[in-house]
Length: 279
Image (cartoon, rainbow, N blue to C red; front, side):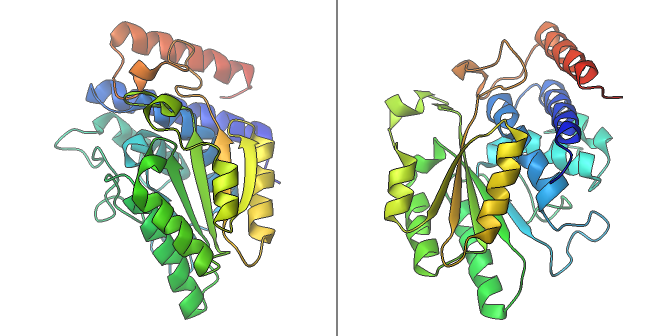
């Protein structure tokens, strides 16, 4: 198992990168990016077989961020992993910058699938996993969707597809932070309980705290050991996690902080970094 304390330190730095990106862009989606930071950190710094020096290697594991608007977290993780310089984060959403408002596989190293239209990324991930099965490849495919995104019908078509083809090389994360742009997920269109529904579709289901590194790592181990069916990891998370005034506040779904808010958020994250013993 990876060093949990080191993963916490990296995730905290990733959150600083998220805030740097969104603040300098004066736009973006910090809430869902912050809620997914711990999962993405565990994936890229413990689980995935990827190489920043060879981002298109044939046998690499694949990852698809289907909830593409949360890309500030994705970009920050990729930058900290070494796919491109961390300095690129402050050019997020700038016309002269590398990092677009949604992931672009054509221009950003480490991005396996362009995403933005909710629901579609999960279907592509299923195709990647099936391709590996057909061609006898050993790489695994991972995907993350949002709980609001699960209201898309395409999500459930892909869920049936993955079960039918017994895609045990596929692992789906649901970033279950309970909030979407219009309010609480349960009020907009309640898709709960996820566990019962995915089990009915023939999936292996794991429920975790999406901010507990040990639970995330253990769930990934369990997913890898599961044969004959795909695995979904339902991760209970907090929107805006790590910045106290953003936590569980739907207004931070798609709003950039002003200077005072940015400085307050960074101060909080730097204090947490010091508490974790980070440099």
